[in-house]
Image (cartoon, rainbow, N blue to C red):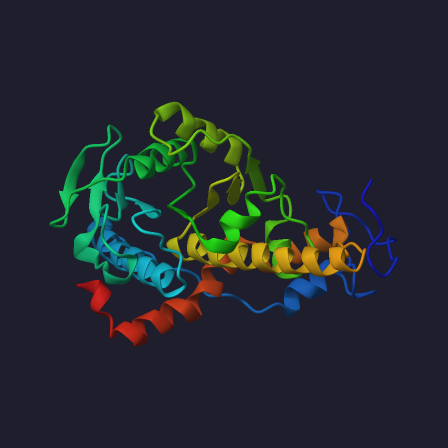
Amino acid sequence: MSPPSANGHTNGTKNGDGVSAEAPLEVGLSEKKARGQMTKFPGPPTFEDKHEERKYLKGRLAAAFRIFGKYGFDEGVAGHITLRDPVDPTTFWVNPFGVSFSLIKASDLIQVDHHGKIIDGGPVRLLNTSAFMIHSAIHAARPDVLCAAHSHSIYGRTFCTLGKTLDITTQDACSFHNQHALYTAFNGVVLVEQEGKEIAACLGDKKAALLQNHGLLTVGQTIEAAVFWFISLEKCCHTQLLADAAAGGRGHETQKIADEDAAYTYNTIGTPVAGWFSAKPVFDLIHKETDGDYLE
């Protein structure tokens, strides 16, 4: 049974997931009326020509790396973001090993098949073995995933030393309510196929995983969603580290959001289209700041 919502109102009708059809924090506002008042998000572009779609998506992937560079998510040669190829979905595009996130252009990306063979791409044709082992397993296990992102961001990897999942204590954290997993094994750099499969199995049908002693992993039906979930999860980890320290120093605990309220909030900010739309400002910004040179 779900705990009562924050305002104690639990008499609303339930939907198929057992979540109240009334907005838990807005007494008397029905789900139907609330949905009618919600902003109608635009969606990602669609293409009839798969080759045109590939060109567009490679540009977005290059932009994603520039965004990761801007946020300081790079750490030496660690980190990777992959894109399932729309022309040949058994292959994916990834950053070449050893090239700075902040310098990557669409023409630098390399295309890899399911055996780990580089079949197309830019002048630097080096593949990060970990990128292949983790991402190939995810793309194989999750046909719905277009993009997967992983790096050793500072707050994410710090939080991942705690061996716990995220507490749902903020509105932003509600995007990950019942949508992130904890992978508890650490066997060094991921260099074997089996561990990649175990990470994919742990991720399951969720959008994110905390890799213990390692870092964050996010996936999305769009490049934009995978990138935004990563940025948001990193900030949620930072928030919880600060909040736990502040609460612990006073002998208190942080206030958790009730499941019913978190589930309702998730339906507004945690959906795939919300993730895509939430990334739009930072993609627009990186295009302005770079004058679009990542598209070359």
